[in-house]
Length: 110
Length: 111
Image (cartoon, rainbow over all chains, first blue to last red):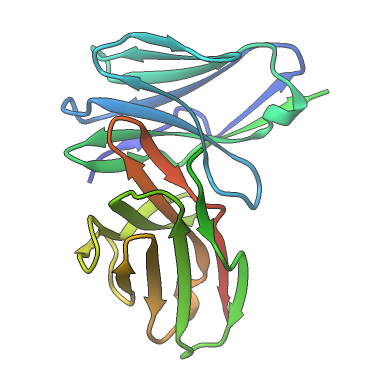
């Protein structure tokens, strides 16, 4: 199977700071990537996506960066808020299949 | 907005019981998936379906079956539940070009 992993299992940040969550993928053929947020006891929530023909995509307070050379994906959250506390994981799409990382648990310290 | 509904959020069953997990979508999407999510293992694909009455095995189909009699409904069936099937089960639909969207999950405990 695919190897989609995250560099750190946990991340703590101060409220108001920026957060960066990283993800590595292994399949060069992957052409579509998604970041999800999952709060405790809930299903994963789609945050932002990016296609392989792009390097960067911005949403509301979130930015996804894609570095295809090193097969690396990152999610940046600006001005992190307590409501951002959750598990974040990435997904890659290759050949109509999705592969998921195990997630990084983000804790926002008030 | 995409809406994926899993009717049972929490279930407790006994070993050997038959378990039905239902997933309903409110749009006319073809592609539906069942995953299980376990700590440290991420999401693993159990079964998926590209159309009514069509089903394909995912990575971990053993102990599970599925049913897709209508386009909007995709059911996961545990014929004889076992304790190692205690998990969070997630239904998802994919919209080509737009991503994969999940329901709220069904947390199953098998005693």
